[in-house]
Amino acid sequence: MTPLLEVRNLRVEFATRRGTLVAVDDVSFSIAPGEVLGVVGESGAGKSLTGAAIIGLLEPPGRIARGEVWLNGRRIDRLPAGEMRKVRGREIGAVFQDPLTSLNPLFTVGQQLVETILTHLPLSAAQARARAIELLAATGIPAPERRIDHYPHQFSGGMRQRVVIALALAAEPKLVIADEPTTALDVSIQAQIIALLKRLCREHGTAVMLVTHDMGVIAETADRVAVMYAGRIVEIGPVADVIHRPQHPYTVGLMGSIPTFGQENERLAQIEGSMPRLTAIPPGCAFHPRCTQAFERCRRERPDLMPTATSLAACWLHDAGVQKRAA
Image (cartoon, rainbow, N blue to C red):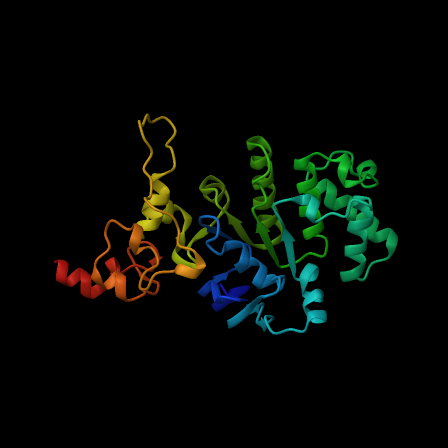
């Protein structure tokens, strides 16, 4: 299927007094219509910055230093600010971790939905209000005809997140960037939000980039998953393969640190050390100081993504020459 979103060799930099920090380095992936791509990794891995770069919301001094972002066959990373504002909302919707940052407390949720709809769709005010009520109902808000005139503070956290999802879908975008949409919610509400995202993808063919650090959310929601470490994708593939048959040592460590239901373990597996600072990313593979399988080449050369049995992994263990010498 033709990709809806293509990210090619994306590099995000921050200029500082101490030099240039590379926060996202040579990241490439695509998302097809109706597909959910999960992006997972530790805090500081570059997940949210990748989403912000795609949607054009990088805060200065952050900037896209290299690479391309294509949406539905159109390059969008070089659009002027005015053109990019038209793309946001109409073609790309966004759901952020804290719904209060996306909602204006001085206006009712209905006013905010109607304004977004009128900005992007050729509807009258009455038609926009009717669509806003439909969106609130579709996202599971009870009594939407009454709740549309309520203010954000009159909704619970889970209900506010539903309003934000309705806001993201108001103009029928082709792509939704969901950045940690369930982190601040309790488990039962998380499950409802996950089910809602999956249903919207299925019914409307919306593509979703789901940024999270929760592998449980990824397992329940995503079709494919990209694992990020120190600003790079270290593994990408079908979600079942990456979870059950991880090919990169970092992904193996991530999966081993998740408790298994029904099994008793005295101690969970852990990855020794911590992710490097942006100012001190080591040469070669950024994971090699923490990797138990690292060898000399890992310390000298940085691996690109290469085919494995089930996914693509940036690890020299999967290089054909290494495998031949090992045999």
